[in-house]
Length: 360
Image (cartoon, rainbow, N blue to C red; front, side, top):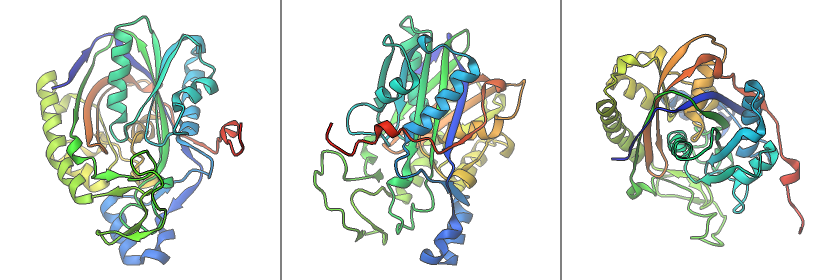
């Protein structure tokens, strides 16, 4: 199995950002009915989520988070040797959104930047890629930026996801320091249709935009996100526990040794099932999807910032577990200082220069 051990890479900063605009599930009552909304909220735990402005993107949120980190840590832009942006919600089909962030953050030309097209597993995969890059190079500092604007990809008439997904972004600063980090990665491409937006890429060029009634009884078009709840739930309660058990076996560190479990914020029911299975106390598994919804790529990081953003002076041993679209999942462990975990920022930031409406 892909298992990685590092003893020289430390997470020295964590930051998250969300749009200012709030959407309450109450706003769906008129279209979906009181019973449907209340039942959905009770099961998922979502009460409201954040929604980006028309031209606000995941990179805007990631940019704000990264700026906060660099300023708070007083890091020179010249010292950042790599930036990786992990998301499905990119600014353009080309170029890589990481290049846009490179410009906006004012990073050096001696900096490697690229995108990784993953969603829910973004944090663990991103940590692995950057840790390996740093270990085998002279890069001493790097940025992992994740983000999604899922509200732009769902159909407002789709009862299965319209009330679930929210928008958010995060940034993680990595530095070469003596510290332990273990990472386990898994994937199963057989489940690629379980969470999918069929059009918008190059497989279904010029796909129709009209809304239609799909076999699951929901209305959407081919550019919208479709999720098979049954498939995703089955995958989560079977494969994710196996990965966690494998991780515990490889590292020799039991559940009781961790201070915090920063898990993907899929929904409240799934989180509670995982907590019950591994006997994780509720206070050790932070949940923020009641206010932010399922934000996919930055979800685990946002939960961390929501829980520890105003706490100081603690050494926190964290288990990350991220899983979903792909299907792709993984587990990671790290020790982070509470002082390095910053509060979630609200922002209306929009990169106006990037709104290109006319021929160049």
